[in-house]
Length: 263
Image (cartoon, rainbow, N blue to C red; front, side, top):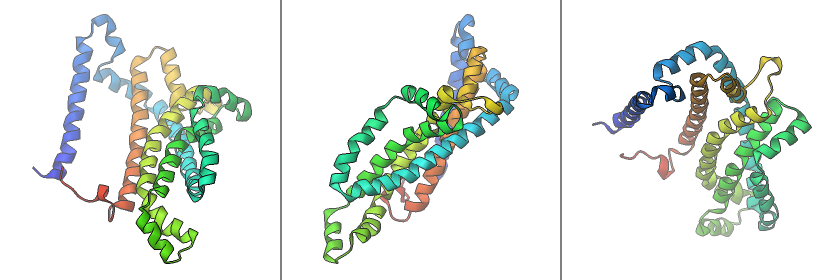
């Protein structure tokens, strides 16, 4: 069988198997517990009934996720260049970056409400904080992981520090950068949804998937809750797919992980 066809066929077959398993598990549950895992027909009905509400919430969450993710990407590049430029700077700043990542979101949330208020700005800040650390760690590691022989060659040619950074280290760091970008692309929708749950607002009728899930849970609309979770997953898949496409365009001509290969 054609390897390219197989790459598409196997995920589709797995999706069919998962849906069949979902439906089977629903019917295997005791009748009194089946509401915990709605069947596919009820899930489809929830999408039809709440489709407009879910679409509005998804747009809000996607906007916040993209804003926080984009900001994290921009800031992480500058921070990584700074960290990679000096061992002294790296030793001084890196522990504080780790400390920032370790602060729980549930503690940051009430502080953000006091500082900037509930709503989109707080959601974007939380998404930024969650997305930033994997990017800066991976990119900095890439900038520092250049082969010593290549660095020596540049220095023998009397290349400046800027030439060494942007002509040698930055291209070498691109695979690391895109790895961090994919990790952050997974985390950004989760961060935006969680932040909306914690610091979101319904002012002006605008709210994201987090508050939507909270409302469905309060109303005991289990099928709609699953539908909300599925929409959140689709947002994550879309963002990761976009980042993977960018990585393929940037690296496909020269990096081993993107050159054509058999299964």
